[in-house]
Length: 339
Image 1 (tube, helix red, strand yellow):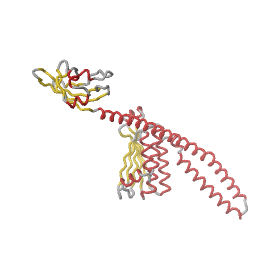
Image 2 (cartoon, rainbow, N blue to C red):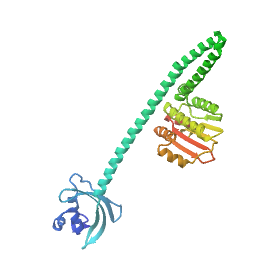
Image 3 (cartoon, rainbow, N blue to C red):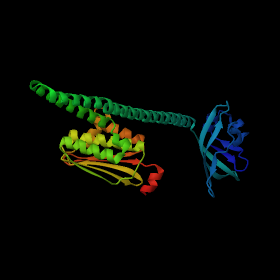
Image 4 (tube, helix red, strand yellow):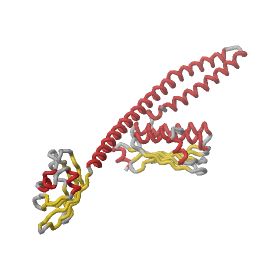
């Protein structure tokens, strides 16, 4: 601590601890004032006076006698010292603390930049994945599908014109081709349904839900009456993939009889709700498995939603079914329309 004249800031007294911090002798210190302690490259006064008060608080950027930088935190009080107005200042050396704080801030900035780069990379990978899915879906539908259709027609013509002994074998071949053709169509739709690009999210999601529930024997319930129109291709793709994953999980694990899917506007956002009446599950257990890498479905949904600045809420309990609610930001113009 030290005592300095209130007007000139010339030092009037100093204790041994302050001399040890700064490296000056007592005689040297008492020939100086507070301005002599500031670093040459930092002449700003960091002392902050509380208006109308008698207590001064602040952080000072000082230097030691040998020139080393020194950061101190000081609290000053207005006092009377030997009949004159003075300041009694108690200081703490916070040099290392500030260095550590600055180092942490640098690390945090670097981590944030790394996270931004990773998010950009993940977004681009998903874009490439969707492009590749679309290409494969078109190839399956246009090339493989057409080839199988032509083969089916040829086999059917042989079935009519062929010998009776061959008709049964040809009929079996037609059935195999028909089954393969249906499987190719299913794969094409799963990769990238053409409705998503041609007719939009509502049509694609309705078709996917009906198709999957029909195969699994579940009752499908779909509601998009309050859905915002044309939320944008990136949002549509993310919403469809999340719904696709959620519906797949219901079919595989829920042992449900009904699935309810709803698209609607909520607080200027596109919201997706997927609910079932299945046996439910322990949410914490699933999150633990997902964190360990044992279950990638939840991680995939969370990643897709995060990349478009969306949010995810999941509710479930054993015997009580499951509810998934995801929301996605809308483009500014669409947000205004939804409002």
